[in-house]
Image (cartoon, rainbow, N blue to C red; front, side, top):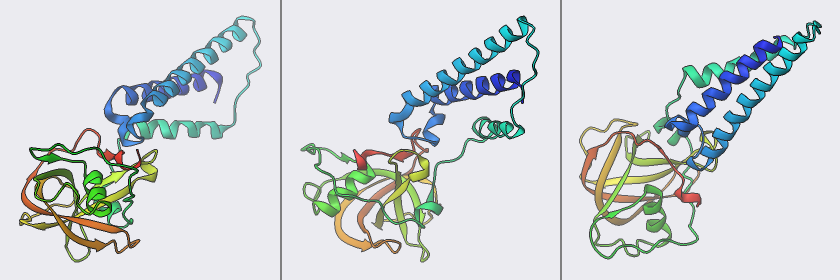
Length: 236
């Protein structure tokens, strides 16, 4: 790999990072709060590529023709480039969720709930309130949450969101069991918006023994995959 090839690879990789950061593609890899770093990394790579090309041009202008080539292993830089450009990985789904223990953690505090109307809560928010606050403020209220469907080995349905610390590599599921008027046909990885009521029913995750609360469904409808399929509220 000569200097011209190096600068070309760096430029295209930087451009791919800028493209990912300026669209929702980056959300397949990292949490939303890291967008500035993705954009900064793309800008640095492009600047490095331009500087490399400029220094190579100056060297050639001075007729310094010592053809210095980097090791062939440098071509491995092309692999993440192809992966970023050609393969947009889907968000982690039911396969990962049912093989990983729930990541539900107790929050330092919960926001005050509105006094009237349906409660539209994040799945992790509902799960935390149901488990660690024992449903305080939830009883008798209409609750709306959204997540993707996962089925355990017995076919029992769960609604799940994958929670992030930093990036998709460390994503862990938060699970809510479903009871009540469960739709007769549930497709794993399909996204549902469910309306229901709090129930004190609990179970333990078979993977790590963590608590899984339930929601008693009164209505459910399929919804499109959200632009950001991951949930970051649990570790805020």
